[in-house]
Amino acid sequence: MIALEPSTKKRPEFINVRVRRQDGPGKEPYWELHKIKYEPELNVITVLMRLAQQAKTSDGKSVAPVSWDCGCLEEVCGSCTMLINGRVRQSCSALVDQLLKENSDEIVLEPMSKFPVLRDLMVDRQRLFSGLKRVQAWVPVDSYYNLGPGERIPRETQEQNYPLSQCMSCGCCLEACPQYTKIELTQGADESDEAFEARKEAEFSEGFVGAHAISQSMLFNNHPTGKTLANERLDTLMGPGGVAACGNAQNCVSVCPKEIPLTTSIARAGRATTVRAVTKWLNK
Ligand code: SF4
Ligand code: SF4
Ligand code: FES
Image (cartoon, rainbow, N blue to C red; front, side, top):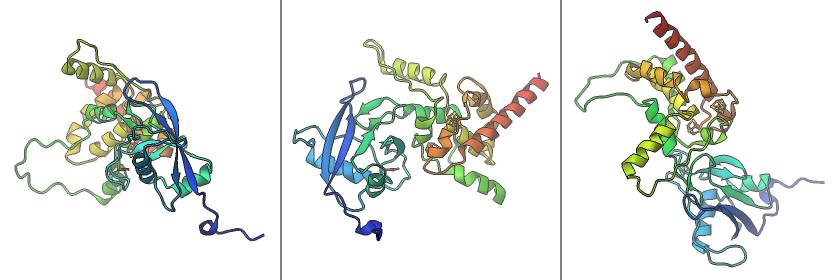
């Protein structure tokens, strides 16, 4: 028997798309089945656009268009992360022809489970960015005046830093991490916006900071200007929800779309925090 080339295999006429929907924060989620005409070389964002255009379930019932987030459409902005056929990934780079090989019956779309749902497939990733603020994941500059040429960065340092600099804050590593558990708070009726924000930040600061933030700490601690905050970052990583909270399950590294060596960063952070703890103890 002659095996058919993938391009000549019979394609389905329609694609079933099962979507986990939620009408707003804290509302009960529910499943809805949609059906769109098959077209070759679709990605999941295009599928979502088709769903929004028709705004009808597979049995013809009119519904509100499904909501989702996206920006760059080229796996750079990190905003389109969702669970696709049960695996966390970017919807702009998830190709329908590949997904149909995983499951020829349907494509299943769900919001990430570790962040509060805003609506349908849109989640609130505030805690992800709060993690980056916790470790001061930036190069500190105190003004816009000309600081002159920066320090030369040796090639080995560039090679170590470049992969880490590709993090797009997508949250895949956090979704896959067993130590990163969901924090969802509700604003009290009498609570001001400021008080609610402060309560959220306090809660976030106790939870696991996440592999992305640990890795960014190692990036900026290895930068000639960024390293001026190295000890502050290490002190944060030694505190609650820091590097010791990592259970080394390595799920993070296996789902990162940018293939960032997250477990290598976590091991580096473990060694650096140990040295920092011993140095602090000796200097007491
Ligand atoms: S290695 Fe650590 S950060 Fe990565 S998934 Fe496991 S527990 Fe989470
Ligand atoms: S480390 Fe990878 S998976 Fe985690 S936020 Fe950055 S790009 Fe996404
Ligand atoms: S739309 Fe930017 S990463 Fe997918």
